[in-house]
Amino acid sequence: MTISEQIASDLEEVFNDGLTVDAVHGYGESSTETLKVFFDHPYDSTEIFNAGAENAQTRIQVQTADMTNVTSASTFTIGGVTYYVSEIYDDKEGVTQIAISEANVQ
Image (cartoon, rainbow, N blue to C red):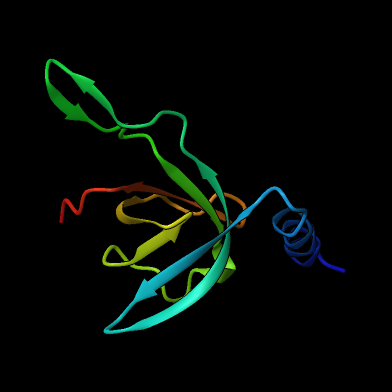
């Protein structure tokens, strides 16, 4: 087994270990697929000086191999909340990090 095959196998185990959540990925006109993602949502929306503020650091980590349909126009529905892609970061050893937001800022 090559090192690339071993990394892919290890990632498959990590993403299927029960710590991930299912995210319904919406793309194209009406296509969807379910992806296993790590969801990092450290803070909720809050009220600051009578104005709503959202944490800009909400992110998901997705296996890069599962990202064939993911673009900046994608949406992810997690726990009944729809998130929009803010930024897609470069692949890091088979995992891609995506900044997401409840507001569509495109």
